[in-house]
Image (cartoon, rainbow, N blue to C red; front, side):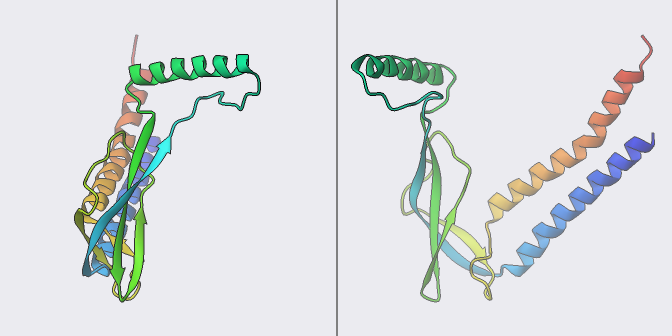
Length: 162
């Protein structure tokens, strides 16, 4: 039982910290700017054993291996190329870029489309994008709140009479 209480307290601390970060960032960023979609970063998935070959036989074997890998990736619904949007906004004549490390299999959005972004007037590099931050907060709360429930379930199965 003490383990469950400690896990619940840890989850409560994580949720409190995430909510505090969200609301501090939201209150800090008060100036609205328009972020324009500039381009998409591309990530190309190379084969696991990709290598430079010298001989003709090695080249054809490499091509066969790549074809098999591409077929496997297509069957597993994994795109050989993934995209991540790059946004840009300008404050006081200085341009800032927003890059994201989340890649998707399709290009979402049109080049030149605009999304609202809130920035800190004193430090324009600090930004708050409502949809992205809400999603991050929701995921953090869901994961942290599931910890005590998972622990409780594991304890019930561990000590349940057979």
